[in-house]
Length: 284
Image 1 (cartoon, rainbow, N blue to C red):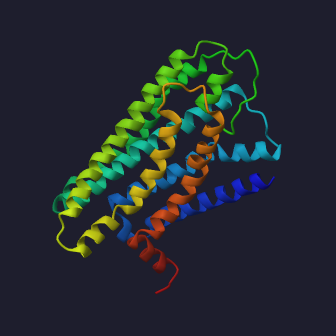
Image 2: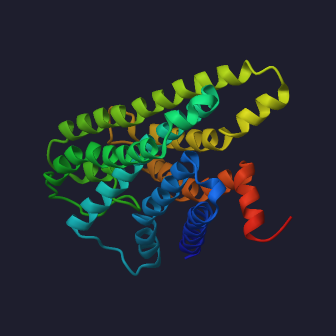
């Protein structure tokens, strides 16, 4: 019961925090820039991502909803992984946006137009869902002839593979390949962007200038570190049939803790957001 209450409180704070960021950006014209457009996409994504699994997990803990149909489980798995893949692509896009803003400030407005930023966001969403379509199709063909109790609070790939009584080597291979494509490729784009960002920041002569430049991307860098650290442990591995208990712990962090922390990270480490908050609450 206490764990269910904790999950419910964290889920409520996650929804409130991310909705607040969306409303803040929507109602404050100074924040109508590509950077905050991507942040709104991230906040909306976090709401969807945590909603796919946390309400059901709370129901399981309370004993009010301890079963799930095959179709519902497959849909939860598909949306859970697709939204996670979308977040990888979106974080890479946000890193590229910061690269343009810091390394090419005079050409930033021309390079990152509103149309181009919308196209990048759309590509992130489409890419995330298309990347998991083949894997979801393979998972739907697995046979289950033994125990039907999922050793997890969410329908994840590992828990499905453990319960399946058919050969899962193809599913594990495709999972590994998709993980490489989604996680590693997006992570490489992010790392390359930050390599040039750090190089540009270090070449700024004044300490105040370096601090100001770094402050524009420090929140995003913190979120990237938290996100990629957890999902790399979960999915970039050749075998999915081990360490389910460890996976559950990491999944709690990525599905409950990280979406909760993100609004606070962007609020506490971003001067423009804090200024908009002060104006919204009428403080000085």
